[in-house]
Image 1 (cartoon, helix red, strand yellow):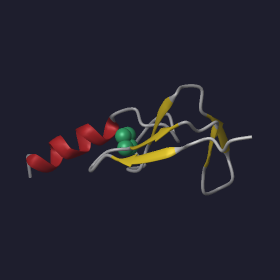
Image 2 (cartoon, rainbow, N blue to C red):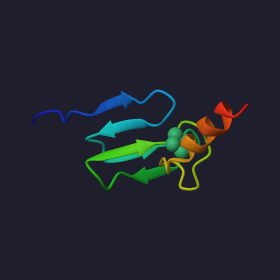
Image 3 (cartoon, rainbow, N blue to C red):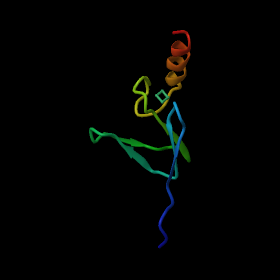
Length: 67
Ligand code: FES
């Protein structure tokens, strides 16, 4: 039996891209099934679909540019 490879890619200012995972476990123990080969996990806390990224981090960056 061979080990399955899971990789995590940091997207600066955005999510973590996780490839090859079956599930993602949040800090509170909540388990979310990874139904795609690559899933994007929110790091900004603004997503309406936590733990998944819904691109809300982009709106945050735009508003910071207007400051
Ligand atoms: S990182 Fe994309 S919505 Fe939070």
